[in-house]
Length: 304
Ligand SMILES: Cc1cc2nc3c(=O)[nH]c(=O)nc-3n(C[C@H](O)[C@H](O)[C@H](O)COP(=O)(O)OP(=O)(O)OC[C@H]3O[C@@H](n4cnc5c(N)ncnc54)[C@H](O)[C@@H]3O)c2cc1C
Image (cartoon, rainbow, N blue to C red; front, side, top):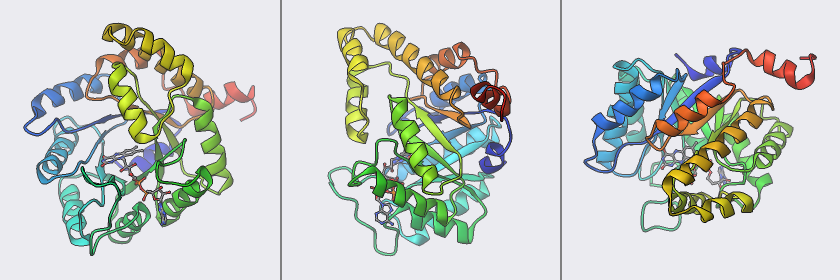
């Protein structure tokens, strides 16, 4: 099933991201988590793609198992890092062979130890080129990344959205955002993107916090701002992971509910390979997957 067509229904979409365990990690353990996530009835699971051959092989194996053994729809991430067009084609052919219909087309970050992304000779310099290549040669539904607080390398949000539009014009079907903690950033980004003529679904990426040190590091790497009130609360309980998780989960519930009340097409959770926190969030939310039109009616007081 193509995610493109799932987003075109009236159902509210729910999805989770997982990543391959560290080198020599235990795929079995991850698949147990995916089985737990499956009970929440997600519309798809996305599987990240890292640098290095063995991690990439693991991504493919995990995506294939989720699709073919667990029978959940899969969104396989793919980056341009250290890959020629021929390498990319080989990977896309492997996706196709394994019945995977959806790709999140990314440029990727510079490899460890390097500061700047360098285009590989015979490869792609930006994600829009990858989208164009996939669109011209394959029949995948294509997602791309969006950044409510702008991508770290972009000089400003306006320029970054112009570059996002290139990915849309090249054939992207939907956008999944980087994590963010202030919904106003998401609404501003969505408004600006729509004003630029971007009409495809923009799906917010939600990160349920359960470890203070970890989120401080991740947020700083991807340029996401942790609002002072949230940071102060988390810092106050930083040594007690149960308390951090309790507050982080409550925050994600409030954040998601506000997004639901403001007409989103779906929620995408960064699960960090754990099911407990996202399960609590999904169960606590008023997430009966009601028709999107009903949500719109609630917002507009009846006028859809
Ligand atoms: C939902 C999501 C999932 C992710 N999954 C992974 C993953 O699985 N593996 C992984 O390694 N990383 C992943 N990332 C991180 C991502 O690879 C990095 O953020 C990377 O630095 C940018 O990738 P991109 O596809 O957004 O790049 P691009 O869209 O190419 O943008 C990169 C930068 O270049 C600028 N730009 C874009 N196009 C042009 C152009 N034509 N000309 C000039 N400037 C341009 C943009 O404004 C931006 O600053 C993910 C990010 C998100 C939001």
